[in-house]
Amino acid sequence: MAYSSNPVKIPEVAGKISFMKKTDRTYVRYEFGRTYNPKKKSTVPQRAIIGMQIRNAPTLMLPNENFEKYFSGDGKELMTAKERKTAEEYAALSDEFWTLNGLFEQLYYEFQFLMHKSPHDVVGVYQIRLINRVLEPMKRMMEGEPYAAFLSIPAEPVEVCGETGVDRGNEKNIEGLDYSDVGLLLTQYRGAMRRFTSNVF
Image (tube, rainbow, N blue to C red; front, side, top):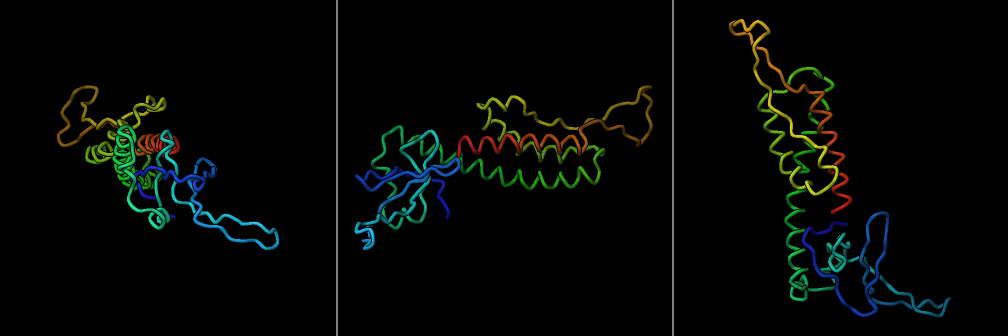
C-alpha cells in the first residue's frame, strides 16, 4: 500500500481510531463499520489502515488511499502551528532524502561493479565530483546523528611529481582514492542512510 510523503493530522474520531504496531512501524486504523457475528452473537468491528504514524510526531501520519476514501481534506486547518511546521519540514526532508537516495543507489551499484573489476585504479576527478554532489547534501542531512561524524567526503585525485621532480613529458603520476576505497566509503554511507531512514521515516 502506498503512503503519501505529505503528513496529515490523525483524525480525532471518538472510539473509531486505533493503533497497530508492526515491526518498527505504527499504523493508524479507522473503524468504518461493524458486522454481526451470529455465532458469537456480537458485532465485529471493520477496520482499515488509513496511515502510518510519524516518528517523533505522534499526532501526524502519512496517509494512504484509505484515508482519502473515508476522509476529505488533509486536516491542516485542524493542525496547531507547531504541527503544521513539523508537517512541512517532514515533507521537504522526505522529498530531498528519497531523491538523493535514488541517485545514491545508482552510484553504489555502479561502484560495486567497478571495485571488483578495477579495484586499484584511481577514481577520476569527474567521478569524485559526481559522487560528492550526492554525498555532501546527504551528510549535511544526517549531521545531527552520532554516526555522521564517521562519514567523510572523498577528495579529488591530484597530480604529483616523482621523487626526483623530473619532468617526464606527458607521463603523469596521479594520487587519489581507488575504486576499492570509494566502494568502502559508499558502503559506510549506505549503512548510515539505513539507520537514518529507520530513525526518521
